[in-house]
Image (cartoon, rainbow, N blue to C red; front, side, top):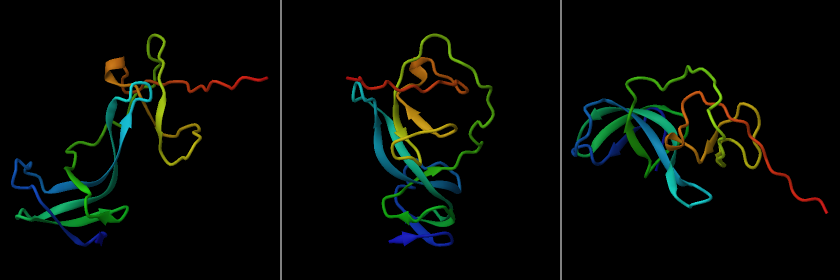
Length: 145
């Protein structure tokens, strides 16, 4: 079943410690994000497909899709909408030390990335990365014979 803006959807699990909020974001789970060197799962990609408002807490809970940027499908997940928006202002700065990492996922690209595109790196808090850190992307060339 495919749903779009204005449609009602139903969800299970609202009776088990569900936050008392009436606004939810709808996400489609995707592949795990793995470190290519260690195969460690670093996180999971989730594609936001819409917003929904609770109409009846159920069970099952009834929600109305208030905004759908893509079709909403069976198996998509709900997460309470953020009370505060994500940090959008930051001061670009170069991190201290020699930072070595790899691009592990491209968004809206197949095999190449350019200026101002979003990528996922195998770096994070434990490598002392902070909001605003700016990195240079380089690629090793092949061997000429």
